[in-house]
Image (tube, rainbow, N blue to C red; front, side):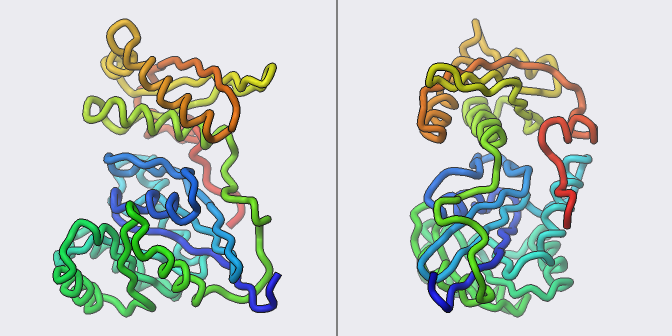
Length: 300
């Protein structure tokens, strides 16, 4: 290991749907955080690891900071805001616009309370003309004293190498926390559950509200095949019918697309069985939220 090796923690914050999970997946080169065109897709704080010759960045992906509407929302906001003070650098992802809405202003107020250096990452630069980028940078620069401003495209990977160099500037010198091969601290069961949830969100599109969770009931390797039993939990009986679909067609579609991704992740054949269960108002139940894996870390 080099003498001037750096290692530290970076958190990704931003309004829901701004591209945090897409950026993190691109940086580490593997899909860990699920992506969806629905807001508030990321529910747990996910740690992923990027190791280079110069250092190791541990990315903490947080749920989007937003106004909470239920216990799940409160949990997500608390996790996001708490992480700001626990890391070496904060990455705030925004879109390239000159309009700063109420959601962004709420984040600016949160950032003013912390001493951690903040890098403004202007994402989706592939969606605007170059001449539209400078006014967007100026608009945000007037609102907060950023340590650095880096425009990127999480989708295409444009300028993400530069972002890694900028993050390294703010990390302390020290030994690496994880082996070079480590890319996440998420248990396999949790990643599998999230992949199934992602495929359900994609397949259902706009047909169902966001209130679904996935519980892994069994995950066992037998004769080189991983057997997985999982339950998709929804909040209403009407949602259950939509998720199952006509003669089970929707559930089969979710299962086949999820199985493909899980086989790539686990590098083995997978036998996936899915069930659907109604748990009314699970997002307002502390017990059910913990049951579905939304636990806060016991140590701070």
